[in-house]
Length: 186
Image (cartoon, rainbow, N blue to C red; front, side, top):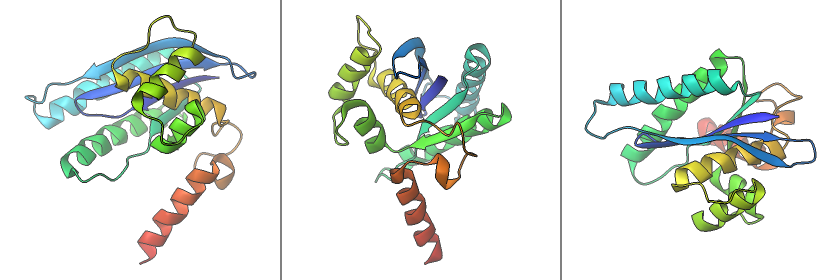
């Protein structure tokens, strides 16, 4: 399965493409960090990231698309940038008919390192090891994007069930959906 993983960010957006075999061995296809300058107008930054993601999706033709789920932070400005990039990325994936997996940071860390509270250095070390790389992907956004793609493939991804259905979700994703629904119900 070829998976394109995205670690969304407005200044640095990590993108990693991996091929994962049924025996869970993973091979690096591509990794990069799309960068935008804070001096650019917001719409130009979004356009730059969107165009770069579209090129990568068309070039690498993944079978699945995985992105880090936007996580609440105290910095509203950071959350907004991540959410805006996530929206563009999700739109591009849907436009290409790709099934999408949304994974929380702790879910990704647990899948790749075995520990949901692993630090960035541990995630980078395991990504380097899993992919058999001689040099660790840098910066951390690149390693995180690869970890998201690996997590998605190893968790089975939403390959056999419709995207968004309970059967296509991990237990953590089902718990997240239930928490979101409870918040909306209040």
